[in-house]
Structures are given as structure tokens and as C-alpha cells.
Amino acid sequence: MLTSAVVLLFTFLSYLVYEVVTFRQTYVRQLYTLSRIISANCTAALAFDNPDDAGEVLRALKAEKHIVAAALYDKQGNLFSKYPQDYPLQTIPRDQVQFEENHRFEKSHLIIFEPVVQNDKILGVLYLKSDMDAMYDRIRLYASIAAAVIAVSFVVAYFLSNMLQRSISEPVHALTRTAKTVSEKKDYSVRATKTGNDEIGYLTDAFNQMLSEIQMQNAQIQRFNQKLELTIEQRTHDLEIANKELEAFSYSVSHDLRAPLRSINGFSGILMEDYGHLLGEEGIQTLKSIMRNGTRMGQLIDDLLAFSRLGKQHVAKLNLNMTTLTKTVYDDLKEQYGNKGEVVINPLPEIKGDRSMLRQVMQNLISNALKYSMKKDNPLVEIGAYRENGENIYYVKDNGAGFNMQYYDKLFGVFQRLHSATDFEGTGVGLALVHRIILKHDGRIWAEGKENEGATFYFSLPVT
Image 1 (cartoon, rainbow, N blue to C red):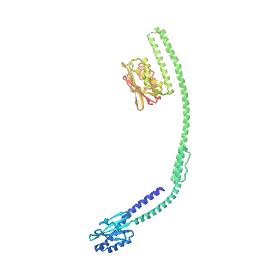
Image 2: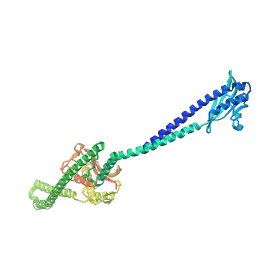
Image 3: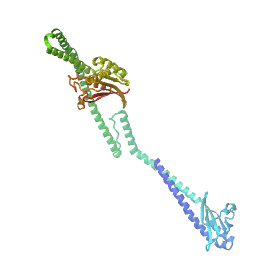
Image 4: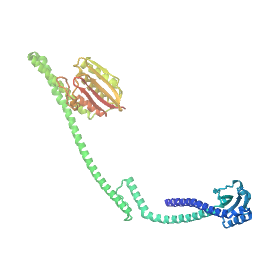
């Protein structure tokens, strides 16, 4: 209804403006026509200097009720005659007489000057002043008609809107309420009520069909979730059993395998000590090989147990001074590798992490760097860090044996070695252990290397 009222009002105002402009133009033309007729009839009066004849001509304007005043001036601009006779002289613009055809709107009046010409000779000028009541009467008439039209339109629009509301608006509102109920309560069993077989009815059918499909899909998802929960519960149960079996195996490895190894190493030592002089050089070397491999086997068992326990170990994050931690690790390793070569430990940023785990990381990386560079004439190990993309990146760099980047994918695997055990001792578990620890700290680890030119191992930890 409001839209209809605005449209009607705008149309009326547009038409009113058009009528006012048109009326003013038409009225100017009409008044010019009248002034030319009057001026033509006044030529004789001006030519023979007869004001009475001029008065008679001007009194003919009495038939035009909208003419307020008229005046005739001679060619010197003096008042020659006027209409009506009792019109105040001071209201006639004697000092503003114009001897050329001209008009102007002054307040609510139209004023026209029309020259009185005979044989191309100006004898004087005619002054006419008319009110604009005709235009105002027309405007009032149009306003009355417009008010009546708008009133009738409102009544018709009201009845039409009531009819449309029952057939369109109310079903749409009902559909909206149903959609809001479904959205808030997540109850897809609700259905919208169909009120007819028109477009709204088809929309209601489509909406209800959509709800039926969603309800069916939800039922399928719920059944799938129930089945998934049962599967997860079963898998969790199986995993718990597997973990218990793995713990039992780890216990067996820790105790049942250690005892025979200790016996082998112990009896080999006794045999070396008591009967070494009878075995000869070759026998002694064989016993040493047995003892060395027994020790290596024991270390391998320890590494495997540490690797298996790491999966269940909780990360206790504390503020760590990585510089102090690294120096402590290196001090422990100096006795094993001696003071050969140079080790540079640059200032390292503090981090939040598990102390024992990150100590294991630094111990494995530094011991590898010392081990693989010890055969160089001037071994050099550098430990440092830098910050990049919101991470602290630590590195351990050496100038030792390095590795071939072609086999990089084997670097962090269990039992994967890129060098012979006869050249460099080790179990092949250390880097896998480091990789797993860094992942538990939400970090990354990678390496760069070149054969016989050294290697650099990097690991990143989030800045806290």
C-alpha cells in the first residue's frame, strides 16, 4: 500500500508541475494576443491625442476578470490612460515603462508590455497586469481530484492486500515460521502446511520434500555414527590388547634378552682373562668381536625400547634454556669423543618443551656430528639457531663424512644407515628417535648433506 501511495503521489506531483509550466506558457501567449488587440485599437487615440477613446478601449478589458490593471503610455512615457479609473497611480510603474514587447512574473501576477505601433512608428506602449487565479483554481481542482483518486486507491489497495495476504503472505509467513523452527530445534520431522495448488503450494511441497530428504539422510548418518562408534570401540579394545602385548614383548626383550647378552659378554671376558694365552691372536680377536657385537646388541635393545616407549610418553613442556642444555650435553660427550677438533655453540633461543626429550635430540645430533667428523684432520661442529616464519630453527652442522642426498628418504627410518657399521658404529635408531621427538613437539626436522663435505641437521620448534 505504501508503495502504491508513493507512486500515485509522485505521478500527481509530476503531472502538477507539467500543468503549471504549460499553463504559464499558454497564459503568456493568451495575454500577448490580448495586448496586441488592445494596442492595435489604441493607435488612433494616441495618434489624435484622444484619451477618452483610449479609455473606452481599455474599459473593454472588463470582460477579462483576471486583468487587474492596464495603462497606456505615450511615446514620451507619460501616462495617457488607465484601467480601471480608480486604480492607484502609484502602483503603475511609470519609471519602468519598456517600449519593446516583454513580460515578467511578479509575485502572483503576470505583467506584459506591448508597443503601440502604426506604420512602423511607435506611438506608445500598453501595460497589462493580470492575476494568476486561474492557475491556482486549476491546481486546487487537480489537488481535489488527486486526493479523491488516492483515497479510492487506498481503499482498493487495502481490500486487495487483504485478499493477497490470505492467499500469498500468510502461506509465506507460515513457511518462514516452519523454516525457523527447523533451524532452531533441528527437528526435521516438522512439515509446512499446504494451503493451495498455486506457486506457493508448489514451493511448500518442495520445502517438505527437502525436509524429508534431510530427515532420511540424518537417520542414515545416525546409523553410520552408531556403527562407527562400535567399530572405534572394537578397534580401541584391539589396540589396548596390542599395546599390552607390546608392553609384554618390551618387558621380555628388556629382561629375557639382556640376561643372555650379559652372560655372553661375561663368559667371553672370563675366557679372555683366563685362557687368552692359549687361544692365540686369532682367538683373542674372535672373542673381542663377540664382546663388541654383544655390546652393540645391548645398545640396539636399549634404543628400540626407548623408541617404543616414546609413543606413550607424555610431553611435559617447560621453559628451557637451549644454550645451557646444549653445553651440558656436549660436556658429557667430550669424554667419549675427546677434545679433538673444534665445537662452536652459538647462543640459542629459549623454547618450551620436554627437557629429557630435547636433551635426547641434542645428544643424538651432536654425537652424530662428532662421530662422522672425527676422521677429518680439522673436525668442526657448529651449533646455532635462527627465527623464521614464527619458528625457532636449530641446526647442528659438521664437516665430516656427509651423505648422498639421493638416499635422503632413508635418513630418519628405523635401522636405516647410510654408512657402513665398520666405518661408523651405531644402531640406526638414533635419527628415527629424534624425528619422533620433534613431531611430538609439533615441529619439523630435515637435513642437507654432501658426501665427504659434511652435513647439517635442522629442526624447528614453534615460538611460544
